[in-house]
Length: 567
Ligand code: N01
Image (cartoon, rainbow, N blue to C red; front, top):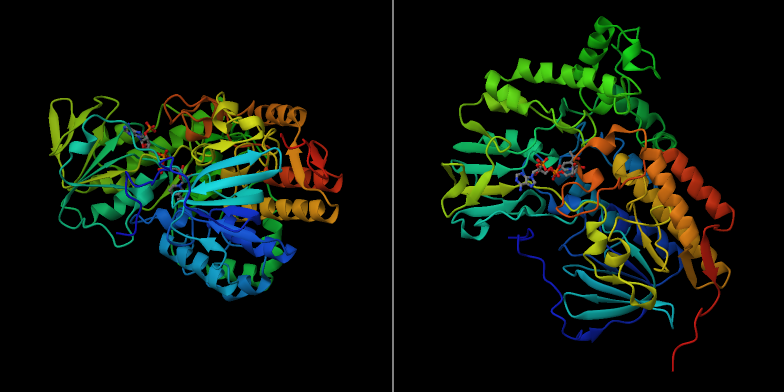
């Protein structure tokens, strides 16, 4: 089994590392899209690099989330690197929304084509990162007993790479197969003819449920909170879009980076003429709104959310769109009681990550699928036989957890990071993340995070976003080397002001009202703060560029050791 086991993650046992690797200029943690591009970009600077990746192969989140039905919900022609014109021209995507295996093939193709594997240690997880103020170097330890010293560390650790398994009584007593969507074995899980249960109805659950229902003897969906989902209407890549994009793919890909979400959502050609951009949903009549929403609903994808500007900022507009989607669910689902349970009413539309689905709601019309409403009756315990809800035991052969991630901060906080004076990042972030531009934390010099909290990251098309971060980091390292500098650190003031900016950017948003992972609300005890920066990708990228052009205000750059080594 190649997938990550639930209890999998090898932890540092506190033993002294057995082997010290040669010191390096830069350690790159992670070999997903961020890490791979970091290798490609930084090697051009002539720095020595050492990469570490917990998985046996490249791909990051697209390596681990190999569950049936996994696919991206950014269109494949947009979900790609733009750093190489040749790569853009030669790669052919087969579907509008690419599947996980196809995206993983793409990641492998990039690794092979640009020869990116040789500096990466696979099957190796970083267990600690400790900064030495005396030498301005980081020491990193791995779960394989290795230790390495690096001048700079790039944490390309992903935003949704720290899975969480809920603390449900009796989980270990289940006699059947337990599997997480985020650790799906690459050699598959036998589901055909089995009694399968799934806990979780976020993007992962909503994608996998319709596929599993096709082969399982019975599928029981344990739902705590219903979610808004829009139809993907997946299919082959549209020939019109392909022609338009391929006419000048590099220019098209570059122009993605000039947009608020690093993604150009195309408006369907049959959109009623009454539609124009930049309007409130409240300025349209009921008929206009229905006509526009029907067209966008039928076109599929996330274009629906661009229909009006205030769907996630004005509670009345939000109510209108929520009711529209409830109406669609009631139309699709035959059983009115089930339909009602599937209508999301506890969180405003679009404020938890919107899902894109292929026949999710219709799946509940199948005779072999049942919905268990955990709001009405929570899970009592898991037993050897299955899941006990109230007085009822749902007997299962396979139990799937699609229960999400400790998003954005989790991947960094699970690495036992200690900065200047031994201060732990976990302590620094006890009340939520603090950093400058989502890139660097005061007191943690020479450590860069890629699409971390406080950056637009998860609200954007991630591949252009990671490229923007890595380009900025690479330019910054080039600047340091060119000027004989060896240390860069965010100032506490810049960090504080950026925190204010992150809060200000979210202040008018209904996102603050949702129990979402954007707000840290899905992890018990996690501080409830907005994690991504909502000011838009293009503004943010411009700001980062200005800061670099201006000689890095808000950062302290130093030429040599800041402190004398202690005796
Ligand atoms: O995780 P989630 P996900 N008892 O956190 C439920 C990206 N992604 O893996 O809402 C019962 O969204 C929880 O219930 P509740 C995307 O950004 C992208 O699905 O907390 N249920 C919820 O239903 C996405 O947002 C793609 O009440 C429990 C579910 O588990 C992010 O990854 C595809 C529970 C978790 O949903 C995470 O998505 C897949 C408990 N104790 C993922 N604990 C694409 O690009 C949790 N839940 C398409």
